[in-house]
Image (tube, rainbow, N blue to C red; front, side):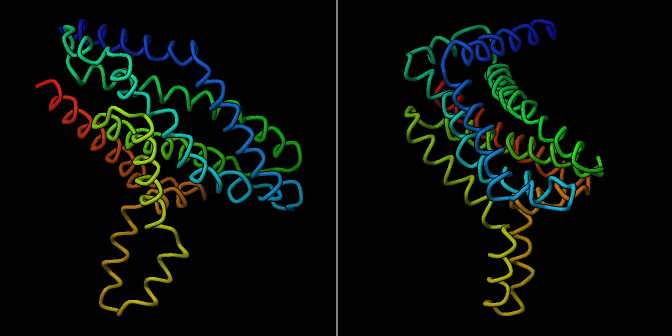
Length: 252
């Protein structure tokens, strides 16, 4: 039975992943991501002007802002596309569980971002050529960046399960990703803490702890703490559970 479940999941994964290559979505998103990531690093992060052989501020700092828009652009088609093509009902009547379809589609979308991040490795070669960087922050920076992308993808998957429109899914997903980013943005958190009474500081700090940004910054600095990894894993799992609930409500 387990082999059959795995086969069903792999079938959905192959179908979804190949669909990215059969459409311009993969190529457009990856190219835009590369241009944005490199452009921000060299022009706004002033990568070549810095005497510090580090990618934390010049390169990884900008990734959350890129994912806020591009991750929903990749994930919005997960379930909305099935509705548009009229294949959702057919997919749900096949001998597979919603979880198999959810995992297959999510892993396919996650692999798109793995490809995108892998193509940015040239900047690592550049910084190693220009200086002698600490490999720790680079590795944790890539881990943080990828987990951030997966978190945004999972949120988009949940939104996509509840709407038939890719445009609506995109707008809702971007709004949610912005919210999950800004509630932990250091400048905003510090301003709110100074404005509100001291008794509410613990509440503000707790809310900021729920932010993607709070955990991303720690990891991108080279500090790999298990709680930060577990946070992103928990967000992904919760979002996929919400996706499952949405699909089951439509299946019923």
